[in-house]
Amino acid sequence: MKLTNRSKVVSNKEMTLAEKIYLPAIFKGMGITFKHAVRNIVKGTPTYSYPEVQKPRTTIWRGQHVLKRDEEGKERCTACGLCAVACPAEAITMTAAERTKEEKHLYREEKYASVYEINMLRCIFCGMCEEACPKSAIYLTDRLVDVETNRGSFIYGKDKLVEKINERIDITTRQSEKQRNAVK
Image (tube, rainbow, N blue to C red; front, side, top):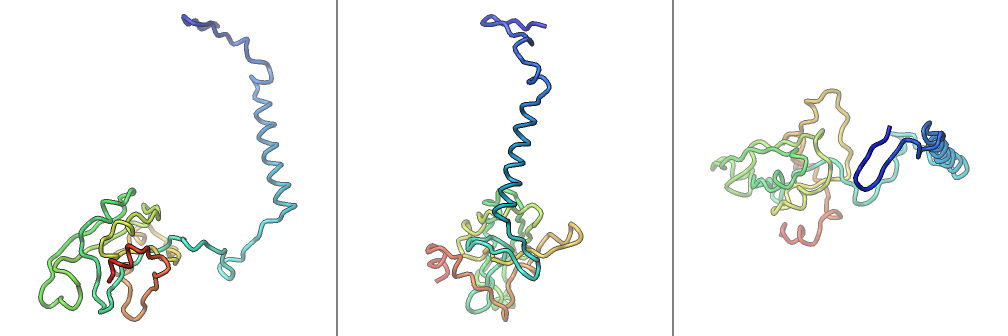
């Protein structure tokens, strides 16, 4: 069968028999696989007995999210929504509410997030929410996300995200100079 075009004529006779049955491609792939197998046997790849021994992670590891409190124990989040807008996976949802006089000891600003949820199945741990937050309220910690057995458990609300008053999480090593100045 010949395909004609104004500029040139193409026919099936240009491919060799070996190319038609894909032998060169198969041997090339097997060669790459064999090269990696030999390199791993000679060099040796470390095996970690998890959870007793954990694989070392980099200092910029992005793990579980945390909503920070200020020095007085009040939530920093003002429900501005910039983290949700910056999230490329659209994993963050929130509902804003007005603070009452009785809640003055709980929240810093007049407005706060009454509902703050992160869908951990959608989150790509990019850190964009961390960079977008003007109040330095959300951070990605070096902690692993818990293993869950059903999909609904991966939607983290304020009960899992807000740090406990007596169990503060140190994030000073993760803060940029801009974030340190925003906290002051």
